[in-house]
Amino acid sequence: MADMHTKEIRSYNMSRIRSKDTKPEMMVRKFLHKNGFRYRLHVKNLPGKPDIVLPKYKTVIFIHGCFWHAHEKCRYAVMPKTNTGYWSKKISGNVSRDFLAKELLQKLGWKEIVLWECDLRKLNFEITMKKVVDHLRNFY
Image (tube, rainbow, N blue to C red; front, top):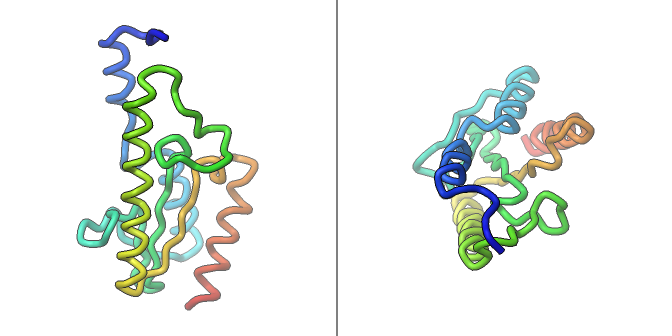
Protein backbone atom coordinates (compact mmCIF):
# COMPACT_ATOMS: atom_id res chain seq x y z
CA MET A 1 0.00 0.00 0.00
CA ALA A 2 1.46 3.36 -1.00
CA ASP A 3 1.77 6.35 1.30
CA MET A 4 -0.99 8.92 0.83
CA HIS A 5 1.52 11.79 1.07
CA THR A 6 4.58 12.74 -0.91
CA LYS A 7 7.95 12.22 0.74
CA GLU A 8 8.24 15.98 1.39
CA ILE A 9 4.81 16.26 3.00
CA ARG A 10 5.41 13.17 5.15
CA SER A 11 8.78 14.60 6.22
CA TYR A 12 7.16 17.92 7.14
CA ASN A 13 4.37 16.18 9.10
CA MET A 14 6.88 14.09 11.05
CA SER A 15 9.03 17.15 11.80
CA ARG A 16 6.04 18.78 13.55
CA ILE A 17 5.80 15.98 16.13
CA ARG A 18 7.42 17.16 19.33
CA SER A 19 8.91 15.13 22.15
CA LYS A 20 8.81 17.96 24.71
CA ASP A 21 6.18 20.50 25.67
CA THR A 22 3.35 18.58 24.03
CA LYS A 23 -0.23 19.63 24.69
CA PRO A 24 -0.91 16.73 27.12
CA GLU A 25 2.36 17.49 28.95
CA MET A 26 1.51 21.17 29.27
CA MET A 27 -1.96 20.34 30.63
CA VAL A 28 -0.48 18.05 33.29
CA ARG A 29 2.19 20.59 34.26
CA LYS A 30 -0.40 23.37 34.58
CA PHE A 31 -2.66 21.17 36.70
CA LEU A 32 0.16 20.07 39.01
CA HIS A 33 1.44 23.61 39.49
CA LYS A 34 -2.07 24.93 40.17
CA ASN A 35 -2.44 22.24 42.86
CA GLY A 36 0.80 23.21 44.61
CA PHE A 37 3.19 20.64 43.19
CA ARG A 38 6.64 21.81 42.15
CA TYR A 39 8.66 19.83 39.68
CA ARG A 40 11.60 19.72 37.30
CA LEU A 41 11.38 18.93 33.61
CA HIS A 42 13.19 16.39 31.44
CA VAL A 43 15.96 15.57 33.92
CA LYS A 44 18.74 14.18 31.75
CA ASN A 45 20.58 12.24 34.45
CA LEU A 46 17.55 10.07 35.30
CA PRO A 47 16.82 6.94 33.23
CA GLY A 48 14.32 7.64 30.46
CA LYS A 49 14.65 11.42 30.89
CA PRO A 50 11.22 11.71 32.58
CA ASP A 51 8.81 14.41 31.40
CA ILE A 52 8.13 15.58 34.97
CA VAL A 53 10.22 14.93 38.07
CA LEU A 54 8.82 15.59 41.54
CA PRO A 55 11.96 15.37 43.74
CA LYS A 56 10.04 15.98 46.98
CA TYR A 57 7.96 12.87 46.27
CA LYS A 58 10.80 10.89 44.67
CA THR A 59 8.38 10.34 41.78
CA VAL A 60 8.67 10.75 38.03
CA ILE A 61 5.85 11.14 35.52
CA PHE A 62 6.03 9.97 31.93
CA ILE A 63 3.41 11.25 29.54
CA HIS A 64 3.18 8.69 26.75
CA GLY A 65 1.57 9.06 23.38
CA CYS A 66 -0.63 6.02 22.80
CA PHE A 67 0.74 5.43 19.28
CA TRP A 68 4.42 6.03 20.08
CA HIS A 69 4.47 3.80 23.16
CA ALA A 70 2.02 1.07 22.02
CA HIS A 71 -0.76 1.60 24.56
CA GLU A 72 -2.42 -1.81 24.76
CA LYS A 73 -6.07 -2.03 23.71
CA CYS A 74 -6.17 1.67 22.88
CA ARG A 75 -7.89 2.90 19.75
CA TYR A 76 -5.15 5.49 19.22
CA ALA A 77 -2.37 2.89 19.11
CA VAL A 78 -2.99 1.53 15.62
CA MET A 79 -0.08 0.25 13.55
CA PRO A 80 0.18 2.10 10.21
CA LYS A 81 -0.67 0.08 7.12
CA THR A 82 2.38 1.38 5.23
CA ASN A 83 6.00 0.77 6.13
CA THR A 84 4.86 -1.60 8.87
CA GLY A 85 8.31 -3.11 9.42
CA TYR A 86 9.82 0.28 10.20
CA TRP A 87 7.02 1.31 12.56
CA SER A 88 6.96 -2.03 14.34
CA LYS A 89 10.70 -1.81 15.03
CA LYS A 90 10.46 1.87 16.05
CA ILE A 91 7.58 1.38 18.47
CA SER A 92 8.92 -1.86 19.99
CA GLY A 93 12.20 0.00 20.60
CA ASN A 94 10.28 2.70 22.47
CA VAL A 95 8.51 0.08 24.57
CA SER A 96 11.82 -1.65 25.38
CA ARG A 97 13.40 1.65 26.43
CA ASP A 98 10.36 2.42 28.60
CA PHE A 99 10.70 -0.94 30.36
CA LEU A 100 14.43 -0.48 30.95
CA ALA A 101 13.94 3.05 32.28
CA LYS A 102 11.25 1.79 34.69
CA GLU A 103 13.55 -0.93 36.05
CA LEU A 104 16.47 1.47 36.49
CA LEU A 105 14.30 4.10 38.19
CA GLN A 106 12.96 1.49 40.63
CA LYS A 107 16.52 0.41 41.48
CA LEU A 108 17.33 4.07 42.22
CA GLY A 109 14.31 4.29 44.55
CA TRP A 110 12.04 6.37 42.30
CA LYS A 111 8.32 5.79 41.89
CA GLU A 112 6.95 6.03 38.35
CA ILE A 113 3.60 7.25 37.09
CA VAL A 114 2.74 6.73 33.42
CA LEU A 115 0.00 8.91 31.98
CA TRP A 116 -1.39 7.96 28.60
CA GLU A 117 -2.46 10.49 26.03
CA CYS A 118 -5.98 9.00 25.85
CA ASP A 119 -6.42 9.39 29.63
CA LEU A 120 -5.61 13.07 29.34
CA ARG A 121 -8.38 13.87 26.87
CA LYS A 122 -11.23 16.12 28.02
CA LEU A 123 -13.57 13.48 29.42
CA ASN A 124 -10.88 11.66 31.41
CA PHE A 125 -8.49 14.46 32.38
CA GLU A 126 -9.96 15.47 35.75
CA ILE A 127 -10.42 11.86 36.87
CA THR A 128 -6.88 10.92 35.81
CA MET A 129 -5.30 13.92 37.50
CA LYS A 130 -7.29 13.38 40.70
CA LYS A 131 -5.81 9.86 40.85
CA VAL A 132 -2.30 11.29 40.34
CA VAL A 133 -2.75 13.87 43.11
CA ASP A 134 -4.22 11.25 45.48
CA HIS A 135 -1.32 8.93 44.68
CA LEU A 136 1.27 11.61 45.36
CA ARG A 137 -0.34 12.79 48.60
CA ASN A 138 -0.80 9.22 49.92
CA PHE A 139 2.84 8.28 49.38
CA TYR A 140 4.40 11.35 50.94
